[in-house]
Image (tube, rainbow, N blue to C red):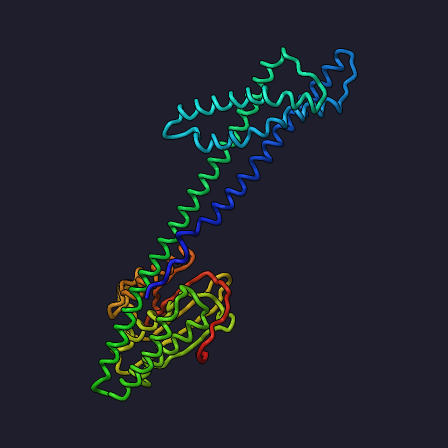
Length: 386
């Protein structure tokens, strides 16, 4: 079974739409603030010039005239915004686009003076001074140049954010695909090993083999319907308890299983089937070859912001050079499929915040220690608590 990637194709759409809305809001507000600033500055300059000439400043009239003059620049903002989107200064034709934008700014400044000046005169009641036409057109050119710079900043910010969202969605999609591949590798490995265990009982104890197959079918049905990459530790323990029942049918009373699970840890989120490969290794590589049997201890406890999962056996243990006996791979990397798969899944889900280590307990045997970030979640439903 493979897990389905959760909408990676559309993952960036809401963020891009939000950036578009932000751009539509920020740019007009910035243009209004900019033109208002120029208007108040010109009103202040006009009032001071009147006082220097010994005239009455008439601040109210100065402010109304200045606001009317500068706010009438705003209707030309949408055409300039469209021009920036169509001809942004950048690759592949920066000089051509810069020339087009300069022509557009010049046209906007000329239109502002020719079309909007009668409106300003009508609103403010202050006649236009023809001698200042060229100076005002140059001023409007400067204002529109600043507006175009503001529009460029918003345009490139949105483009950069969209690129970052697409890259994040791609990285998330690749991570989910990697997890799906690891999960597909894990399940056939699990099925093969259980079926191999059943074959050892077919001739020696057919009734036990039959019971084992029946319970395995029930467990496999549950596992195949489990789609989440993470679930509550309670749920993980339920699945693990069913697997332990299968192994007990095979090994009988030769191997004792001890559960040491703290109640505070049962609601923590853990990866799907994170413990089963470790318990399987304890049975198959640690204890299967011992006539006297042995013991498997399964533990879970919270340690600050971390969750510690332990699977320990008193079987063959590590060899003299620190490598696990019985084909488990080396202590640092874990060469078996189950250990390698578990370590890769931990890296995909948690990065450096999670680890899997193999240790030699003081009494002998092997201890597998999984450390995860502790994330509380809903407890699973399902079977008896081990």
